Image (cartoon, rainbow, N blue to C red; front, side):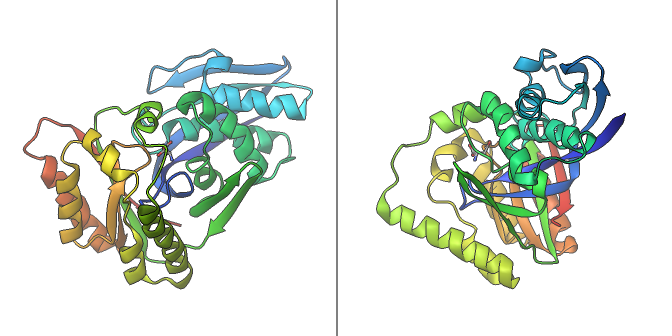
Length: 298
Ligand code: HSE
């Protein structure tokens, strides 16, 4: 018995919602094949795309799968094949796609004993190893789809948010690697109250804008005054990508997760394509290789 799954890339933080907001992309993701075996335990039998550890206890997909079977105690084991398209360290949830894909697939093969929140919990165990911190803002949208808000991680509570029907995301991924653990280590422990007020007002108004399909309010809410000032220096041409995207009609443009990818939101596909072109143009005279993706948010 086996199952093939697509585990999508995701955008975490969404400007104002560090560690809580995220959304799912549908045009890029990893493929995985998971198979029941007589032998108990988790074995990773194939990894294509990138050089990652085969040892289950050292691989995020393996660690999350082990967390699940430790709880479920099934009468069988599982073999996992991973076909990665999402580059590790790209800022669009590479480790998260591996961590959530394996538990999603195993749950299906076991007849769905767990709900999506429980799956996110198991996936967090894998993600924790990769990023050296507990957060679920990439995992939740990968498992639930669309936009999610991680209301708390202990106890884990995830809210599904609605998506306005013409909302698109444009991703630009300059090909440098940023480790989430390092991009977290550079953040301050304290936030000035005056900044916190602006940031939480933005999170609240962004959520309201999603519920009311208010594109203007989405635009006015997509700013990050807490994290971006620290991390933007890690990303070549960050300010230019942002300003050119906005000129091309973006509703907002910010770092995707811990970078180096950046995302912009767009009202409509036509506009999204213009933004994609504008982003590409910024890098056209540089030595930096890049990938871009346009995805409808569902
Ligand atoms: N919220 C996380 C961060 C997402 O920005 O560090 C990346 O895993």
